[in-house]
Image 1: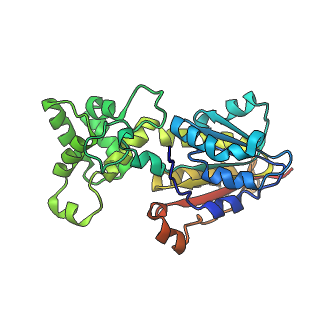
Image 2: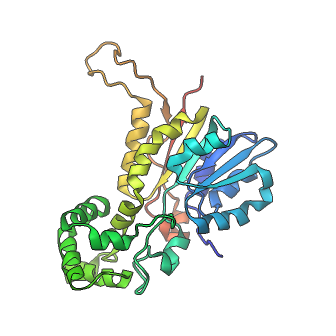
Image 3: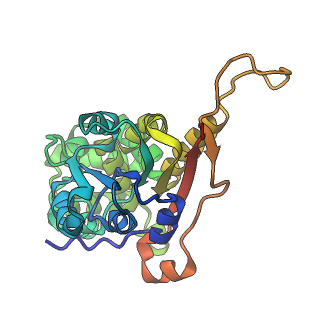
Length: 314
């Protein structure tokens, strides 16, 4: 199996973690193990990496890639939202660094039968990150109401033609069930004016993104996990997160800001009365972006942003 995913913001992420040779690090989105490999290279005696991923193909590829590091590496098939339970099961109370790369892997995009790509005509509408789950993109496309489709395409895809796309999907499925990526792409194209299709990017990109996010509960998982991951950091430990679209970035930015300054007192109060304590500091006032060199070598890095949070030292 070739898991040919080029790790985005690789050097920047590794540098952001301030890796200690004897530290414990958690890769919450292991993928093909690109970031993990560079972390492991920097670990010495007593150092450990825990890799978490819900995709069986990713785990197989990463296991092969990281096997030279032996017992330093533990790989668990799970969603990073379960990070607390995963670490507890391994007898780990805290980590020196945790990082996430929230992008869909090149392998997932390029493997037609996974159904993530809007460039394959006859791929099944799947889009599951974890293929143990029973619901697929096909279920969303065929079973959600027009209103539900409109809201996810508008909110998660940020598509200005969301209302018309939802209407076209519902109309088409009354004729026959929508089963493949190609069928859905043609329906979306018909819902977008020809002039816009000629000048914009691929017309289905935003809708496919929206369905994938909804199916895998990506934003919900991220929102619910940041505080837990922060709590699991050792004093001075860092949480580094790479996002790929504005909705993810906004969640990370806001949670980091709140964890740095959680006070809810009115601004005119002379002293804090709510008693909420800062968990740490935002290291990246502005997100770290890919270099010009990386952008030229890897077009999928274009929208990547890295934000970093450091937990208070005792």
